[in-house]
Image (tube, rainbow over all chains, first blue to last red; front, side, top):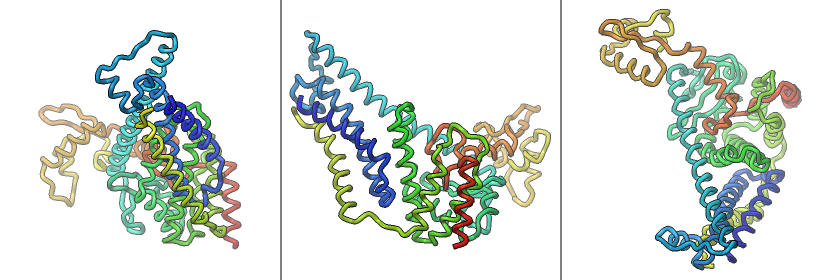
Length: 304
Length: 107
């Protein structure tokens, strides 16, 4: 029973923590650290919520969640005698359902992403061309501005002909450094579970803000990586020029209302003096993330 | 693919092979490529006697548009398939960005 209570408290703490973190601004000063914190918050929330339900349901075995599940699955009896036991049965079913839904949305999102990437690569093979001015980059003949990376084992950086005309050579280099950072650090995989969660819970404001925060943080992480190889000011002007050129006349459902603000936030980070988060704060956050990530699996094992 | 896009009528593998100029491709290679493209849905084929005639399923522009919609994240599925340089912004926001750009360049 104690394990169930602690897991429930942990799940609640994660939800409150996520809600607080969506409006935090220190995260912009250490995007990589903040991304790790988000990841451990997400994993812990999932394990704690399902764990709390299962721990409550399996409490009579007195063996913890993991052992309790193995007893149940190897033919242990699940007595339903009193009204109280019905609640336990409901907890068991909802615990299993939630776990299955979380795993299923993750797998579905992974499969869908892979499929979309494969189709995109195939189209690029048919349409895109090489350009001597930007070696190793695929160019699509379209006057609009576009620049992105198709991540994968062999990532491909793609820009439109419009972008080639829009940006100067320095700005192009800065933008490419940004895209290569995305590809190297596999930011798509970082974002994937948060996008999957959003698809499972589209009405949740916290989940929506979480996905948006993480999406912005990976952009900032890529900016930080890129500025090592190019002038931050060039990256900033590239961002502004590019952002202004991608403007779409009609508002669209897929478009975040804050995307303009996000571009400005990234530009501000690049042109204003950069203050990193003090190392001791960063290490404290990292330790907390690690402790958080370990806590839920331990509580699953705890026989209580 | 470019050759098929350039033609108005469906072509057979032999005709495509003849149109590929500077490369010395075996006719079977051309056939294999056409066959694979049609199985992936990029080409439609129709029987013509003993040969297949191929034509593009979509115009080149349609594919370019598809790529660009995905590139600008306007397909609405919020997929994590691509990582973009910057998200598309609305018209009024673009004005703010333009002003910031002018300021930054004057510095």
